[in-house]
Amino acid sequence: MNNKNISMPRQVKSEQTKKKIFDAAVELIKKHGFQYLTIKNICEFSGVSNGSFYYYFKTKDELLTYYLSEVYKQYVTQLDNPKPQSDFRKSILDAYLFYGDYCEKTGIDFISSYYSTENKALCRRELAHKENAGTEYTSIIAQTAGDLKEAKKNDYLREEIDPAEAAADICTIVKGIIFEWSLNDGKLDLKETMDRILMVYLDSLASEKFRREFICN
Image (cartoon, rainbow, N blue to C red; front, side, top):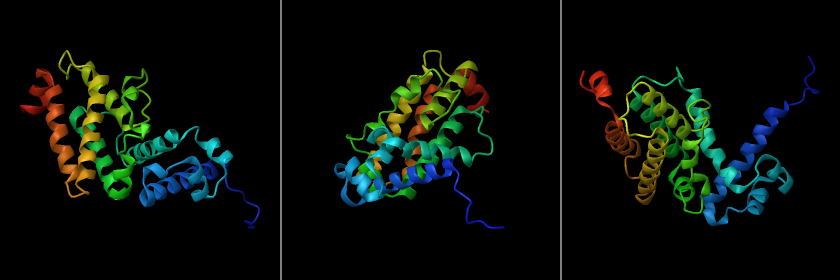
């Protein structure tokens, strides 16, 4: 069979180009810092035109959000059962521990620059409050909101707990832990710290019914 005339599917080519642009942004951040992350520099580093950049990403923030969405895609891919677990704590903790592992593999040079006050892609609280959070997961925080909404339906959360607000708070806690990890040049045990602090917070959300069924037994 002659393969010379076989063309690459548009979707595959599109994903490859998006990754090429993002990989260039990662290298820019690693080598020069977040302040050098301009669309002009990204295009020069990746070898794509401004038009190509704006075809795939409307803004620089949208490009930076690509990192977070890719983490979630990889997390879902490795799940045996993507449905919420009865123990909402485990479902949420597993997702963020995966993210912690992903941060470690990505490297301290990138993460310490990515977690900048200039990076508005990290402003994720609104995702926890979207109406579709919990039905169409697009990120770890959206899944967290969904897991907590499901727990609320089962009377596993304290009555006064708002699932969306709790999901946003968890995201804030995680950002603080990662920032601390960055300040310590990666010497802090990231996943152990996440596990310990998040479990304390998640336990504080649990209703008496949940405690009887999952904690006291």
